[in-house]
Amino acid sequence: MKDVQKELLAISNALSALVAKVEKMMEAVETESGADTKAAKAKPGKRKAKSAPKRKAAPKAAAKPEKAAKNDAQPTMLDAIYTMISRSRNGITVERLKKRTELEARQVSNALYKLTKKGKIETISRGVYVKKKK
Image 1 (cartoon, rainbow, N blue to C red):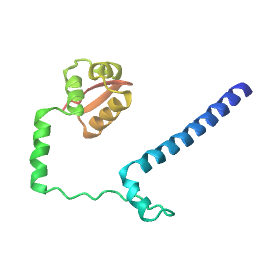
Image 2: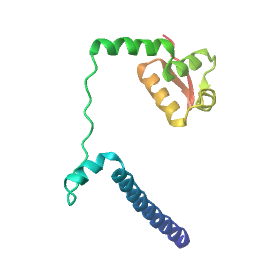
Image 3: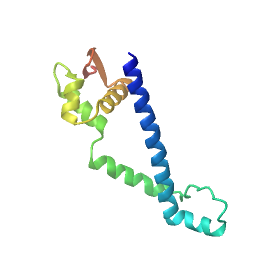
Image 4: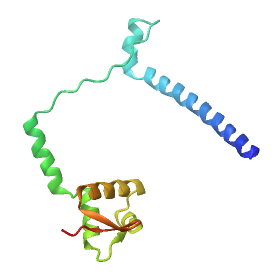
């Protein structure tokens, strides 16, 4: 048990050292980029904090047609999973959904949760889902 704790401590220390190196590298990249050069030239002793870039609001009328076109062009992940579940006669397992959709386990789990909350599917047994009968 002590050997495992020693190994974990060594890994933790190595990760801490890597984090420090990455932070130094990030600072070097930021100072090399053009964003910090203006502030550095103005006041060499003080560094100005970066502010988030300001965004302009998109016109509301233009946003709705783009969204509608996106939904018409390609079905969503929820639609694809719901279609697979509704086509199965005896239900479909989470493993089969993961293989067919090529999604991560978390993504499939979240989709199943959303479909269950919407009342579109139900659980037969653990890990097996079917289309909810109306």
